[in-house]
Amino acid sequence: MPLDLVERDPDARTGLAFPAREDGDRPFTFYRDGTADTRLQPGTVTDETLAGVDWVHVGGVTLADDPARTATYALAERARDAGCTVSFDPNARPELWDEFDFADSVDRALALADVVKATPGDLQAAGIEDDDPAGLARTVLERGPNTVLVTLGEDGAVAATTRTALSTDAPETISHDGYDVEAVDPTGAGDAFTAGAITALSEGESLAEALAFAGAVGAAATTARGAMAGLPVRDAVHEVRRRG
Image: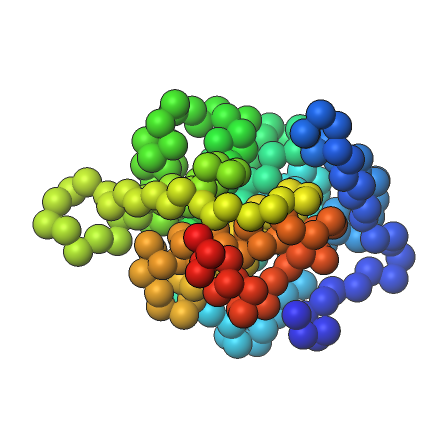
């Protein structure tokens, strides 16, 4: 990320998140009381910055506190009006939410997003449920986005879109079974998947190719400990795909 896109608040600390592995789960401990990410102000991202990008991604964590909440919604609205593709990841973290309702907050964000990436757990926390992952993705489409990707861990992912060449009113739904890798730590795999999906879709790839590419990025990210150490370059992604 270019450093000129990093906003600094000289009067606040940086928020911290510590993941822990307990019985296969990944509970997080957050330190975000008054930290810089909670204090993001509306209008911080300039019109000139938005004019220079094609895609803006936002997440649910910044919706838990104001003024960052207001700033996140405002940014999504401005990005949409500027012709950018807007993507959203609910990223449910119940321990962060006490002032606002998570389900209502996510519903508002879905209406502003073009692309949504989520887990079944994220959507269940937002009151959106379906035992069939493909049906779950189609249900989210009804809330506003045109493309929805639902990640299923080691079981791969499914995606649904209203952008289809088929002569039918039903949205296209596809799935990918994922990749067999020697996973070490799943921390950050979801964010890696999101980065892969945005990369592929912004480069004009088909939804099927984007799902396969994103899955390989996410799988590769699990092969090292920590949220950043496993983030792959393209050669590593191609190797994961080659091995299947």
